[in-house]
Amino acid sequence: MELFTGVLSAVIAAIVSLIIALISFVTNKNTLRSEREKFERELQRSMTSKLYDLRLEMYPEAIAITDGLRKSQMAAQQAHLSEAYFKDILKKLDEWHGARAFLLLSRSAVDTLYTLRRVLREKPEMEGQYSKEQLEKIWKAKGAFRSALRSDIQFLYEEETEVRDD
Image (cartoon, rainbow, N blue to C red; front, side, top):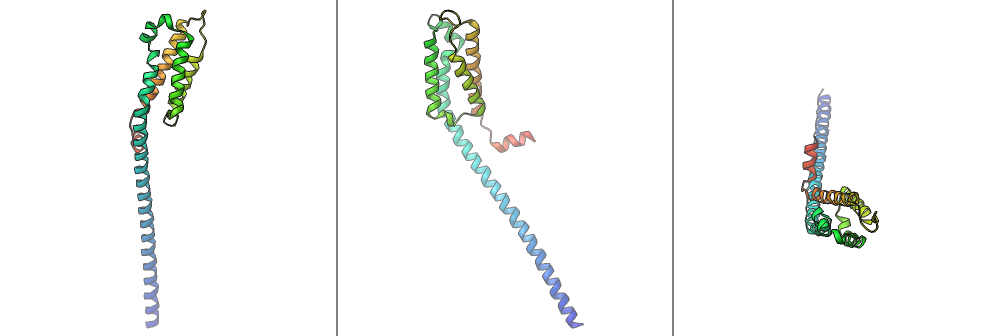
């Protein structure tokens, strides 16, 4: 009987040790996962902050370049609205995009930039003069591009947008 009690005590002690080891393993695993997720969120926040700062540095130049595409600016330049006028703006926009901005633009901003570039490349319809419809398309494309840039500057951390989606 003493042998049976000793073996039973050893088996119970072994089972308790295994349960404690299993609980410790699961706890450590969850703690490590939690710490990794926290680190990844902090890293994402840091990268988002850097991207935001670079956008704030670069985007005002694009706004200045496209200033000549405002309705009031085009109306003031009516006599000088030639293909060369729009090609000059397009050239400046391409230089801006090619320098560093291409790394910073969101997909939406890139799409609107390509639309603006395509519209600016169109030839004048009427004997070297742009039609009202063409000027309206240019103005709308400029507006969509600027709106996409403004959207890029909205500063929301990824986890904050995830909370909204839930």
